[in-house]
Amino acid sequence: MMKKTWLAAALATALTAPSAFSFELTTEQQKLSYSLGLIVGGQLKQDVQDVDLEAFQEGLQTIYKDGEPLLTPDQVNQVMQAFQQRKIEEQRQEVAKLAQANMEKGQSYLTDNGKKDGVVTTESGLQYQQLKAGNGKKPLATDNVQVHYRGTLVDGTEFDSSYSRGEPVTFPLNGVIAGWTEGVQLMDEGSKARLVIPSELAYGPGGMGNAIGPNETLVFEIELLKIMPAAEAEAAK
Figure 1 (cartoon, one colour):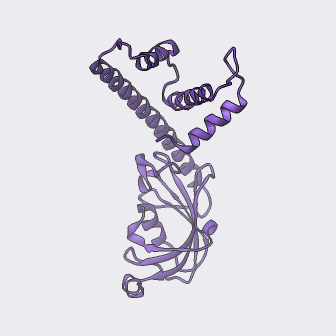
Figure 2 (tube, rainbow, N blue to C red):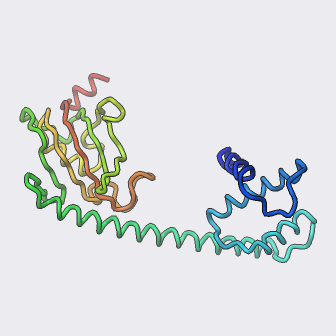
Figure 3 (tube, rainbow, N blue to C red):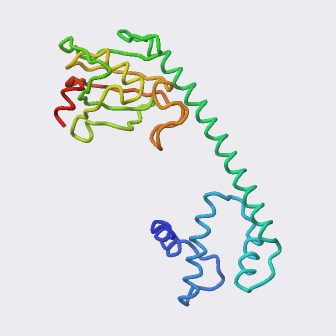
């Protein structure tokens, strides 16, 4: 089924774009046919930028006029499989380029940040900077912690924030990315810190959805509000 957004975009285009026809769309059938062309064309253009329109139209006419196809079903499958393989390889190369660029950008950021006063770089490569002191009590990896946090990419783009949601989060410290597990253990209850987490301690080459790309270095400002030992957290459920 075609997505509603495609239909809306196609209809909007049909109503606003100059007509390429030498005649107006006067009948409902003409309007329907033109709208379908916009929808199919819009979908195809996302993946295929260089469609041979004459060959494409010939294929459509072959179907609608019950003509004899110029390619057998097996040949069509071979053509489509080869196209899909090319697209997969193109996407792989694009991701590889992005991953390399993100890695270099992150390494540069870590090098510069590591020179700042108060920044401690651990053996793993994690960078820690205390912003506000706490009461001296530190969590264990087996504890649950309640925190407020804001996460950004090195260019400042925010991808997640408990502040924006208006409430802190509670989770087992050993159930998150390695950079968090290590970094929050360095914090005192009630303190605030800034963590710069190399990609290998975050989401690595896989990234996370659309928000975090491959090999992204992440920056977090974290307030450790409360430490809740695992037994206490279990009892509170």
